[in-house]
View (cartoon, rainbow, N blue to C red):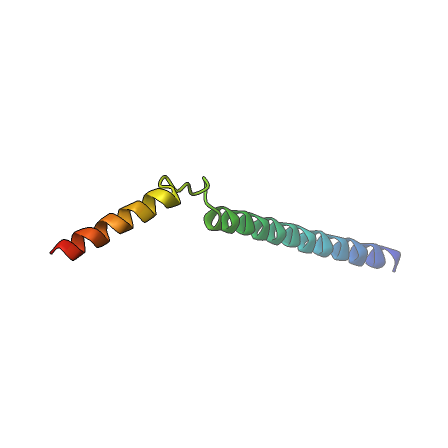
Length: 70
């Protein structure tokens, strides 16, 4: 009877060990997926506007003046 109990305990331990391995693998996959999504959703470099607001306003005024000449 004792050997049957030991055998059953070993089986349970193996089963739990396998389930833990699967759980650790799932956590790792989710973590990697989350990291990939964060990289996709955030720009690698911040966007820089090369034109100042004053330059944009001046360009808009020039376009408006040219349009009125026609």
